[in-house]
Length: 92
Image 1: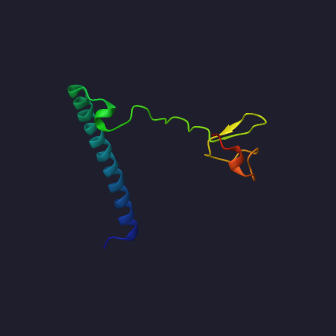
Image 2 (image 1 turned 90 degrees about the vertical axis):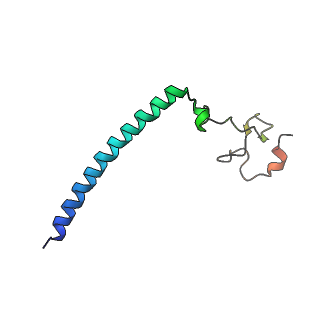
Image 3 (image 1 turned 120 degrees about the vertical axis):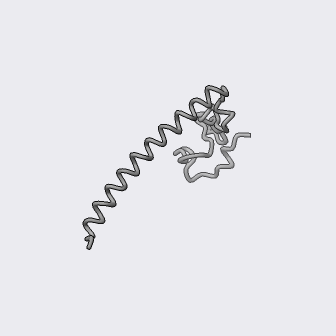
């Protein structure tokens, strides 16, 4: 009769074996993908990827008339605007 501990050891061995096979298959898949990219001269845009990962900064929505500092409305509210009516600081 197989004990729980023996099953645990066998399970760990199988996990390690599966990971080795996964890495091997991944390497082969990457080799095939690279070959197809070269053969067909594929670009990131052909695959649905954007070449530019960064988006443009959000335009400023609010301006502090005293300092000229601006805020886009994203992220933490700046101290000069915290607790105040934002409509008075809206950039038109």
